[in-house]
Structure formats: structure tokens, C-alpha cells
Image (cartoon, rainbow, N blue to C red; front, side, top):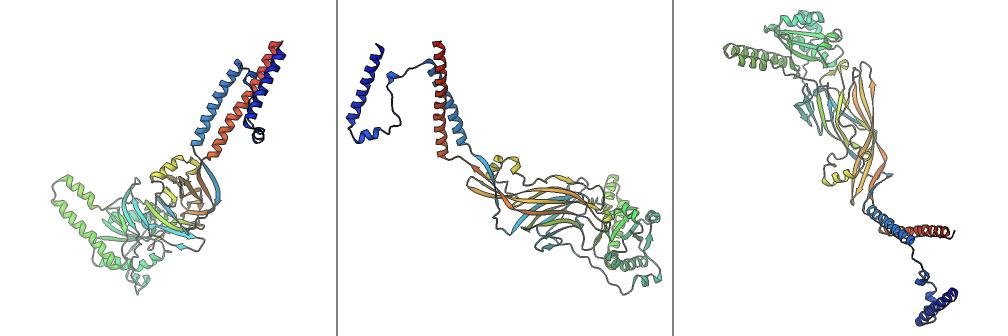
Length: 492
């Protein structure tokens, strides 16, 4: 009978196990065997089934997929970010900029810096260079680097302007109605476009009258005039007078660029007028002798000395600023002029603006690092190639910048960069105030730490064990449930 055979087999197995234990010796070995977690049952008591084989193959497949997935995840590193207090001890930070002012001459561009510690630097020139632009916005003339604007020499007179007028007015007062007629009557004219409130114009007034008298005394064929831009505001707008005083030479009714910007003394003005006359006489003699019409046309164009002077300026360089709230601004001002607020247009394009070292992204290692960074962690210069256009006078854009230190801890090397966010809005000015393009900055006390995050080897081993054990157990339970269900169905 089956029951007797089973009892015999169990008895034989028990004897076998007893003999094994006995062979190992009683006492210590018997106690050690009592803590065996991996006790084995006799193979004769197990049964292999087709369902078990299918579930075993499924288990191997699932284990393999999960194993390779976990190994790939272990080999691949990810980027993690965290917020921490900024421990940067540098007292200053470098600010790099390249800005194009589309309607302001380089002579009138001033870079000023102010901060909460009391720093107030006017017309900064160190590490700053300026380029005059042409009408297409291309750099045409280098206007200097680290160069202060030279102060022109003014002449002091014992006589007042009223005393100089006692023997007659030599510099003709011009209006909108008489301006063009005056130019038509004089082949060459030299005109002072001024404002009565301008201190430089007030100092120039007696010199200009004496200069006009000198021209009359020497019978120079030059018309000397002056225009009050307060009374004749429309005429000065048509002539695009951006600063007072503007001393402009006219030849055959056309303005000759650039405007006169040398010393404002009678001798200097007279010398300038005589040089103009001498050059004109030399050209006329040469023009009569030159038979080639093409050469005459070309030299006539050169003789005009009318170099197109588009009022555009590209300002670039860097500033070392304190790590406190502050601003730098581009303002229209001059040591030798008063700016015309009614004609100051601060439309500008930010070609580049960043904080920190400008070439930190050019290194090969940094380029590899930046390739792994997501776009939201690369806000190093979000204002680049942005135009800020003002359609009216007496307004300008102000920019508000929040700077956040970013520490890139990747590959064992820590690189410090500066990301920033900006908000811009138009600010309106009173008619008497000259607008400025202002860039206000503030450094956050918090910093962003970006670093690679890899998994530890023991995490990987734990996951592998969990995959193997979990898959084996789960599919074992499924196999047991299916086996019982199928066996119950066959019994029915």
C-alpha cells in the first residue's frame, strides 16, 4: 500500500539524516545544524511540473531585465541640485558687458557705478572701450580704451557780452525763417547752436562774438551765426542737436561732420576757420588743373570731409563691483557739454551681460560639463542679443537683476559661475532730466550647488538581491496559486 511505502521512505530519510548528524558528531555540530536557514528537503518529495517550468523561465527573464536595468542605472550618474548659504568670500565680483547704444555718440556716453557701500564712480574708463558705429550698426571708429575725455580750453574775457555788442553784433542771430537763407548767402558758415541755460554756452558767448569780430576784421568769406535752441527748438530738432554748445561747420548749405570739438578760444576757432579756407582754395586750384572727370568727382567727395557720423556707440568691457546691491548705468553726459534732454534716446541692445570670469565656458572640461546640465541651470547670460527700444524721448529702460551663485561640483572639480534673472521696464523722466539706461543688481545670499549623484556599491548589491529574491518569491506565489487552481479544476 502507498501509505506503508511512504512511511518506509520517510523512515529511511530520517535514518539517513540521523547518520549524517551522527557522523558530524553530537554536541557542537548538532547545535550548529539547528540554525540552518537553508534546510533541504528530499528530492523524492518534490514534483516538477510544466507550469513550474514556464514560471521559472518567466522568473529568469524578469530577473535578467531588471538586473541589466539596475546595472545601467548604477553605471549612469545623474545631476542633483541643492540650496545652501553662499560661502563665497570674494569681496568683489566681475561684471562683463557689451552694449550698443543706437542713437548716442561715444563722446557723450558715460559709465557710472553706484552701490550700497557708498561707491559712486562717475565716467568709469578703466577696462572700458568704445566703438563709434556706422548707419548699419557696424563698428567704424575706435573711440578709445581707458581714456578720459579731454577738457577743452575756454578763454576768459574782461569784457561782457553786452560790452562787446557796443560796436555792433558780429555773430548773427538766426531763426527758423532765416537759417536756410543765411546758408545760401554764405558758401561756408560756422554756427553756434546753444541754450541760454547751458553754463558752457555762457562761457563761450563772449569768445564766439570776439571770433566773429575777428572774422569780419580779416574779411574771411565765412558767415558766423548762432541759434538759440530754446527759442528755436524746432530748428534744433531738425538739425539733431544733441548737446550744447554744438559748433557746426556748413559748406554750400550742408553740415560737415564731425562737429567742432577742440578748444574754445578765439585763436583756436580762427585757426580752424583758416585751415578750412586754405583747404578749399587748394582744392579749387587742383580742380581746375585736373582733366580727368572721374578723379575730379572722387576728390570732390573726399574734399567735402563730410564723414557720415551716425550717433551710435558700442560700449564694452568689465567692472569690478562689490558684492552688495548696486547698479551701473549708461548715461548721456560730457565734461564739455550740457546734454539736450529733448534729444537723448537711450535705445540699446545688450550684446552680452554676465557675471564672473567671461571665458569660464570656453574650457574643454567646462564644455563637457555644460552639455550635461539642463537648460534651466544655464542662465548665465539670459539678456544676450536682446533689444530694448524706446519709441519716445524722456524715457529709458531700467533692468533689475537678481544674481545667484552657482557651484558646479562635477568630476571632483568645483567651478563657480553666476546665473541671474532679470526684469526690465520703461521709466519715464521729466523733460529737464536726461534719461539713463540703468542695470541694478543684487546678489542672493543663497547659492545653488549642482553636483553629480551616483549610487553606492552597497545600494546596487541590495537592489540586485531584492530583484532576485523578490522576483523568485512573487513568481513562486503566482505558481502556487495557479497550480492549486488548475489542480482543483482537474479534480472537478
